[in-house]
Image (cartoon, rainbow, N blue to C red; front, side):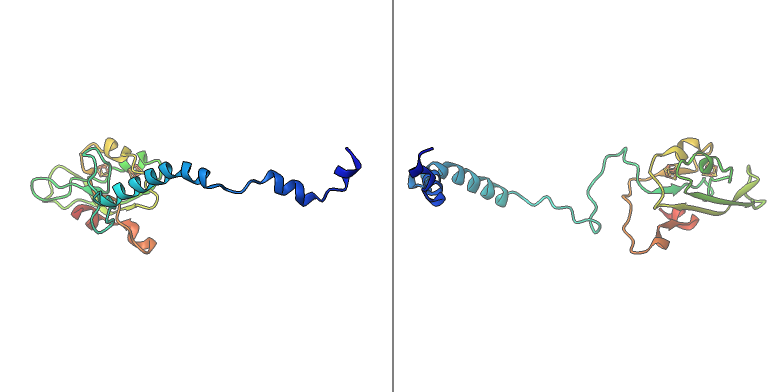
Length: 164
Ligand code: SF4
Ligand code: SF4
């Protein structure tokens, strides 16, 4: 390196390497800018696809595993016989059942649940409980899980499950 180069101020090199953004370079960007504007305009004119959840839940597949329901027989009695098969099969251990003697008028069963609760915060919607049930007493609906603002409301009791 010559002594003249050694004493040249660093700013001079920097100015030489950074060229001003020329008008020609700006012209080259115009097609991309126009293309971007066309995409924005196309999106602006399309109907909105925003789901108004939870007021209007979006449609789901018929095979969707949503909230559970306890089913009833022809007489309107719950089919559940408190056999605990669903609670035993549940990998999340979120089903709590307490059994009691069935009313005499309810033929064909010894027991019914006094308490039947599902902790929906722990449920992983696997459907094992439905598969394990020998009485088709529990099924999964198409209802998407509802949003609550406290943990207590996520414990679905027997009445809620029967009405679901
Ligand atoms: S869907 Fe699965 S995790 Fe949920 S209650 Fe049934 S067995 Fe348990
Ligand atoms: S829902 Fe079915 S598996 Fe569960 S306790 Fe009732 S009868 Fe048994």
